[in-house]
Image 1 (spheres, helix red, strand yellow):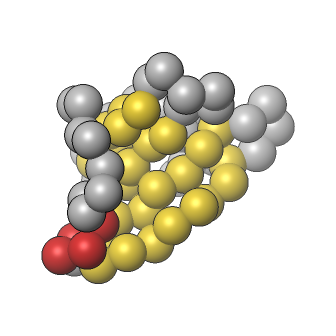
Image 2: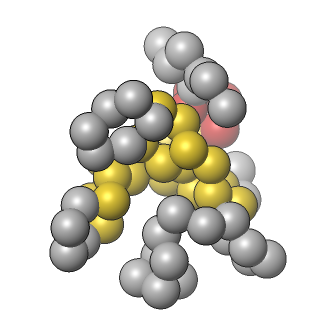
Image 3: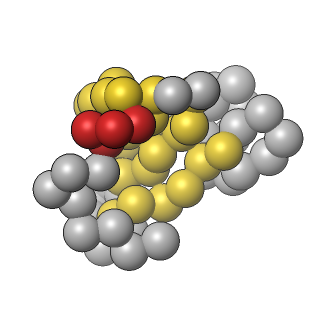
Length: 64
């Protein structure tokens, strides 16, 4: 699913931009009670965290 378009939210893919001032920007994908945080590089999507929702946003200054 992320391979097709990792930046655009759509049915079945609740995607949000978390930090757009970073290079590369950090995105979040909601998967049930988990949150997947990832970076979009030139030719790959790199997952950096998979966390339960209860712990996902601790320490983030969420801008979106």
